[in-house]
Length: 637
Image (cartoon, rainbow, N blue to C red; front, side, top):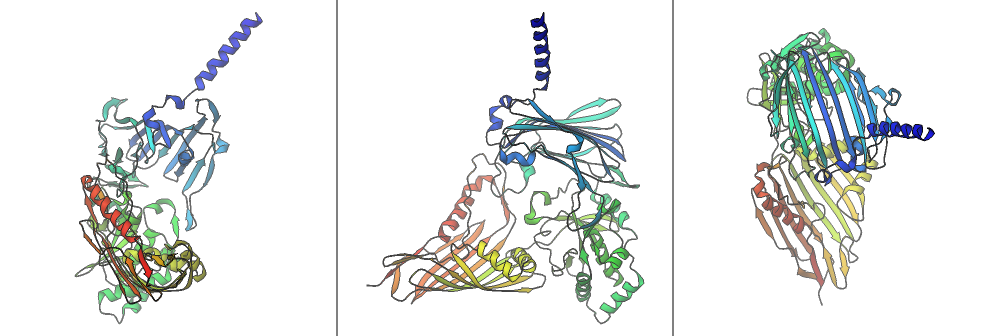
């Protein structure tokens, strides 16, 4: 009898354990493990549009972390505010054999402000959780329900979130009233969404299975060209009592115009100040420059996100009184200053980010919220001036790589209009360098370098110069120049603030053992500070275009005084390589005891078919090789 009782006890125990066995790593198909750091085992998203002012989202997913490179995907981070409520969070941790190790408890979830160091006040918060487990592989599972009291922004379904990321299964189901017009835009989705009727509503479901990890090919900045993505957006929408329509850019602009209405009224003292600043200026552009200079000196960027502050600017009186605001408030304030001077300007929404990355590529045929920043467009009689209102240092008319070369939504009295922000090309993005150097017989090099950086090529340099002390700047240079053993003996910087800004840099550098000495020979690379080129890897399966967004020109003129009594034994061949991808010209010679080296490198922007990848690889491979080729000097007998 005791044996029978023990048998049933063991049976019940094993059955209980068996019910907890989930996500065994051994069950993952082999092709999903190859080249992957994580595997999404399952994902089920359900987004319910209840009406034009309310939605609910339920998400359940499980991710297997294969190695430490995948740890960043193991945590949970959910932002919320007065428009979004987190109803519930559940979570569980499983080992490689699928055994349940731990369940999430409410006390394990951290709830904190989502404001950064530049935020003064905001009601954005974030819930954070992590199991902090590091015995690989392991699996985390989360189930979250959130509700929204608006329909301004809909989710995006991105089952494969990055490279080295496999997907076993993922689905997204949208539930909406039969009379509601659901808008969506698909990329790389090969199937047809399943349409059904359910409980009096319409439903559409997208699903993918068994997607292997991949490597992002070179010169591909747009992830949605590589992975399945479905964007969703409302037609009719409502937020905080404001109603709008998103079926056209014009309509979306009308909504923003309504949010901005009446918020550009300056106090009387500021109207008088505007008159004072512009009293003796007749030229419109000069008035803008004068008002922008005043604006930059008297305001600063601080994020204040309260209520509709994420979408609606604080009024001009608020900024005038406090001297600060976020991008929306500051842009609206600068617009108000110009308005007081009878100068028209337009609040413009843009997705900001360096290098015109994937997120900055606006989907022109899918009107929706595709911005994270606001700038000001000032139409003039013959051209247009753009103003970045969050910076106290950018010159008027210059956008920088942060907002240049992309589409933006300009808000007019008649609604929204898509416009292009300034594009900076070869003549604006330049690096012009002259070097005079002296080489001794021990191979040490004394370098005097003068460089002018222009356009977007000065963006990073300008930021470093403005934010680092001379001592920290020197330490930065001593870590980041393309030399092996060296010291920066002296440095000077001068900034020129114009519509195409420049930074002039002067450096004195001592480079120990720059040249190699072997008996009577000296081996030296004449390209001292600008060794470029890329070693791209061929992707035989590549299908996406090759895309270069940045266009620039580098010019280097190098003169190296060598020890007396040496002549050339061998030198790099002069080269002139003109292609559709760029232009590369190198010449070198020895005149007396002076080694003369010149280099011109131009990279062109453009989009080229995948079939040309070998030609692109060969172009940059040549540059990489020639830039590092040595002169061989031999002592005369």
